[in-house]
Length: 589
Image (tube, rainbow, N blue to C red; front, side, top):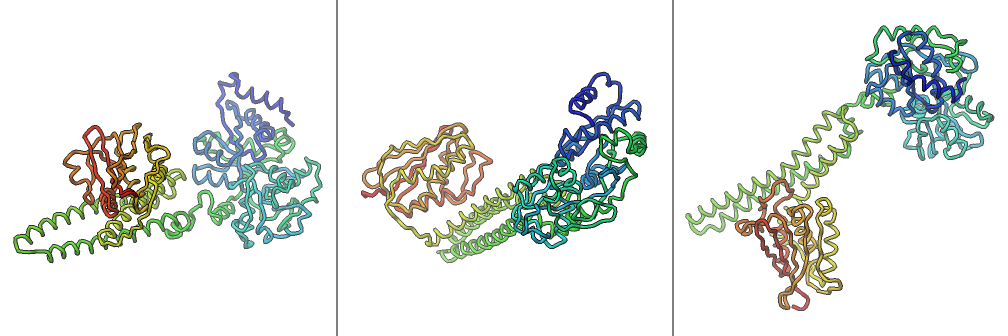
C-alpha cells in the first residue's frame, strides 16, 4: 500500500521535467472517498499504464464533486476518465465518451462487476423499518449526481410510493461516502444512503460492529454477499474521451485487461482486474425514469415542460395577456366616448368639423402613444418567453434567471401603465375618493424619500432633505394621494437628473394659505415650449431617451393636487435643471 510520502514523491516525479519528452495522458478520477484516497488507490494503475505503454506518461486528476468533474470534461481536461455509471452515461451522451473496460471490484477477495445502493439507519431506530417509514425523516445521501450513493436508491424509494417531498429533509454530504455514515452515527440524520460495500468497508476500518446498523428494504442476490436495498447495476466504467485516439484507447484497454489480482496495480487499487464493457442500458433506463442528467426533459410534451419548469412564468404571461385584453377594451370604450362627446357638443357644422378634426388628431395621437407604450413591455415579455421555449434545453440556470428577470421587469412596467390608466379614468369620472386629514409635512416627506432611495442609489444620486428638523408644518391632504404625487416627482427628479448629483427638497411659506414643497434637480431642464404641455396626459419629455415611463404621472399628480385645493407649478431652464413646487393647503388656512 502506498504511504503519503510515497504518494508525494510520485506526484513530484509526474510533474518533473525528466518526463517532459513523454506524451502526458490525463486520467480523470471520481474521488468519492476524497482526493488523497483516490491518489493512493489509483496511482499504481497509472504507473502500470506508463510502464506498459511506452512514450506516454499517465497522470491522475482526482475530482470529488460530480458537477466539477463534468465541467472539467466539458473543458477537455481529460483523455480518459474513471467514474460512476450515471456520470459515464451523461458524458457518453453529451461529450461522446466511450467505455473501453468495466472495473472488476475486489471485495472479500472476490471480483464483482455490479453494485447498487444500501439504505440504512441505526439498529435502535424502531420507528424505521421499511421505505414507507422514510416519510418525515431526515435523509442524507452522497450527492444529487451520485449513482450508488443516491440515484439507484431514489428509484427504489419512488417505486415504493415515497417521494422526496415527503422527507422531512434531504441533505447531501458533498460527495464523500464515509461522511454519510458518520452523520447517521452522530444522529445528525435518521437515514443514510451509500453505495453497496461501503458499510462493510467502513465498519472494518473503524472497528465498529456492523450489526449496529439496520438495512432498509434489504434484498438478497445470488453471489453478491454485501448488504443492498436495490437491484444491482454495472460497475464503474473506464472510458476514453472523444479526442483520444483509437490506437491509444486499444493499447490502454488491452493493458488493463491484462491486469490480474496478483499485480501491484490491482492490490493497491483493491480490484481483481478489468473486463470488457458491461451493458449500461439499465443505467440509461434509470436516468430516463428519474429524468436526470441528459434525460431531464425525457418524454415531456410542451405543456408538461411548461408546467414542470416554467409554471410561474406561464401564469405571469397569461395574466399579462388578460390585462392587455382589458386595457385594449378600455381604450376602445374610451375612444367611443370621446367621439360621442364631440358629436353631442357640436354647435354648428363648421365648428363640429373643427372639433371632430381635433378629436381625431387627439385620438390618433392617444392611440399611437398608448399602442407604443403597451407594445414595448409586451414585446419584451413575448420575446423572452419564446427564447425560454425554444432554447430550454440549451440554457443554463443563469441565463434562465436573466430572461425571467426581463419578463418580470417588463410585466411590472406594463402593470404600472395599467394602474396609471385606471387612476386617470377614476379621476375623470369623479370616482377618486379623497380622505383629507391633518398631516405633518416633514414626516410624509421622510416616508417618500425612503421609498425612492433604491432608485437614487442605483444612479448614485444624493437626496438632500433641507426641511428643518423638528418642523411641525401641518398640511391638509389625502395622505395616500399626496404620497403618490411626491414619489412621482422624486422619481422623475432622480431619473432625469445627472448621475452623481443631488436632488434637493425644501419648503417655503406662501402667506397663511399654502405651504410650498419644492423638489429641485440639476438635470437637463425643460424647454419653455414643453413646460406648456408637460401636465397633459401622455406627454413625455424628449430631453432624454431611454428613461422608462408612461407619460401620465405628472398629469395624475396635477389632477390630484388640484382636487385637494392645491396646485403644481414647474420652473425650469435648459441645462440647469428643474424645480417642481407643490402648493399645499396648510392647517392655518
